[in-house]
Length: 118
Image (cartoon, rainbow, N blue to C red; front, side, top):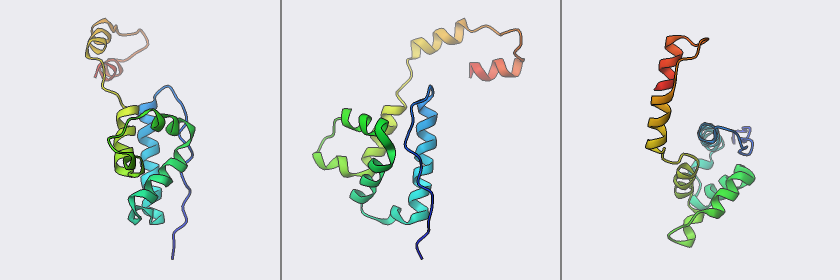
C-alpha cells in the first residue's frame, strides 16, 4: 500500500532564508520517507527535489557549479550544494561588530538580550 502525503509547497523567498530552507528540507525529506521515494534511485530523488523546490531553488541550482554533469542528478550532492547556498558562512567581522555594538533595549528583558547576543 502506497502512502499518500502532502508534498511540500515550493520554497518561498523570506528574510530568513536559512531557517526557511531548513524547514523546507525537513518537510521534503519527511515527504520522501512517507511516500517511499527515499528508496528510489538518486536520479529520481534529485528530479523530485527539482520538481518540488520551485523557482527559487531552481534558480539557485542553475547558478551552482558541479564537478561532473551527472552531479546535477544526485540528490545528496544537490542537498549539500543547496545547504551551502542557503546557509553561507557568517562574516566574523560583521558578527563581532553586531555583538559589540548591540545595546539592551528598554522593553527587552535580560534573558531576551542575552539570547540575542548568542
